[in-house]
Amino acid sequence: MKSAKLKNKLLLSMLLTCSLIVLTVSFYQGYLRLERQKQQIQQEFISFENGAMNSIREAVWLYDWDMVQTIVENQTSKVITYAEICDRSAARCFKFGLRDEVPFLEHASDIAHREPTTRNQVDIGTIYLQAHYEPFSVSILRDFPELLLANGISVFGVAIILFFLFHRQVVNRLQQVESYARAIDLNNIDRLSTLKVPENRYRDDEIDHLVDAINGMTAQLKDDLEQRQQLEQRLTQAQKMEALGTLAGGIAHDFNNILSAVLGFAQLSYTRCEPGSKLQQYQQQIIQAGDRAKKLIGQILLFSRRAEPVREALNLAEIIREDTPLLRASLPTSVDIAIFLDDEIRVLGDATQLHQVVMNLTANAGHAMRENGGHLTIALARKKLAGAAAARLDLAPGRYACLTIRDTGPGIPEEIRKRVFEPFFSTKKVGEGTGMGLAVAHGIIRAHGGVIDLAGEAGEGACFYVYLPETDLCVEKKIPPATTLTGGGQSIVIVDDELPVAELGREILVNLGYRVAVYNDPNQAYQDLSAADMAIDLLITDLTMPGMGGLDLAKKLRSRNLNWPILLWTGFADKAEAADLSAGAISRVLRKPFTIESLAEAVHQGLSGKSGGLA
Image (cartoon, rainbow, N blue to C red; front, side, top):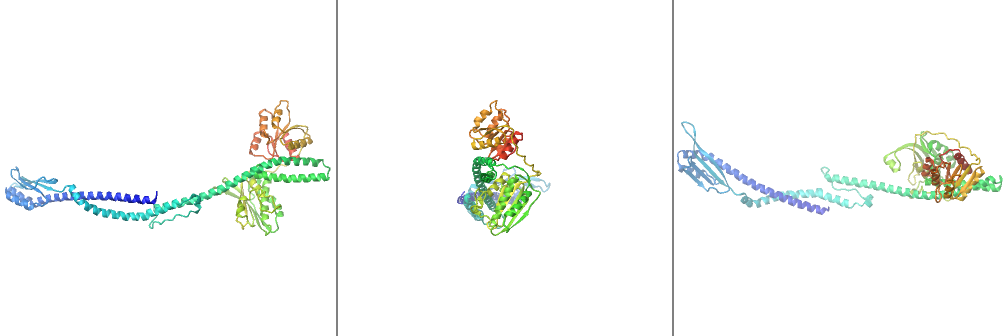
């Protein structure tokens, strides 16, 4: 509703209300005047009796009608328009004035005389009086203009004063509220100022409460908008990281097949070279380069969360202490290190990956302070997150281990803060880093159900807070890995669409003493393996193959009651594979690129009936 319409409606309502009040009051006042006239007539009747009754009684008793006439003419006022005095038998009456002029009021009474001797009352006659008064229609028509004028001046005068007071105290303030409300732009809510209107000088009224409510609403809108923008930024960042992770995981998976063949055949060549020869040295360099590539691919898989960590209860303080000697050796002497650790904190995770997180974050901090030196603080404490604090970090409420790594370097500029966890993004010079350190740390912590929070302003150093869910499980001692064993002529079938990888597996296993058959087509392998006369001791299959994946192949064979041990080798192991592993379709999972030792150990455990876990 527009403010002008509100004013017009108020004026119209005031006019109609005041007119109704004036008319009602005027009619009521006319009615009161008529009632006062009737009361005056009754008073005249009483006055006539009080003043003339004794004289009339004596005159009627004496039957002196001339005296009656004289008394009536002298005692009757202008109000009484008719008087009639009669004897007891009404044989003789005296009448004065005009009778039955309507409308009128009448009054009748008996004339009593007390006998001197007996003191008894004797009725000797009657008195009948009439008083004419003006009809209400005549009276109201005569007095109505005067009443309307007087009442109109009074009522409309008061109404106008109240209207201006109401307009000033209510309408003007409502107009400001309306203008403010119309100016609200949800797209620019952050620029909206606080609503201010003149307050009631005596006490707060409903408009003041309305203003407070509107200001509270706009403040809430600003907070909601800010939170929404933060959520949108986090969602955009999460989507970008997810897309990059998917891309990196796909590339890493394909590259693992290539790297498996390179490393495997290099190892086989190394074992057949003449010890100490140039050729063996060349093979050693190939193997070392392949190991570095394997680690890089592992980092990419960690970032993409395609590699599931081995979860076990860990004392996080011990992991940090194990990294301390290497950390001190890698940092410049101009950098001081202060370490504050809570030895009671335990988390569920992969020790190797958490070592990598600590080293990546501290290495970045040391690089930031390499020129001017500084102070590096590493602190581990327990922190309970709930409410807004947990929501801001996108974590469930609960107890967390909070690892703080703070440096006094130049800090991270605001314009690149959103990109620090992107893979291959780096501000370092060429040759000083791969740009995967923070990306890998981000992937590892996310895979562990935690989060890395970046704090600190540019020029004040950088501070990373690593939150990991705390566990109540006890830390168990590690069991030494089993030794690699050779085979004894067992029959093994390898199914892999990548021919170099399949040939590598056959070459390794044949050298270890196994009999090996290779299939590059999973459908052909399923047909042959389903035959009744096909007897094998172990099946090795790749995860991703055209036409039929390794999991589908394993499930189909299980459905035909073929219960051979099945080893799945793959470039990554996701949650679906873990579920199938626990359901019994797969006996073991071997990560690519594998070495001679890891393949031999996985095959030996598969043949001996040990299932579960990753190799």
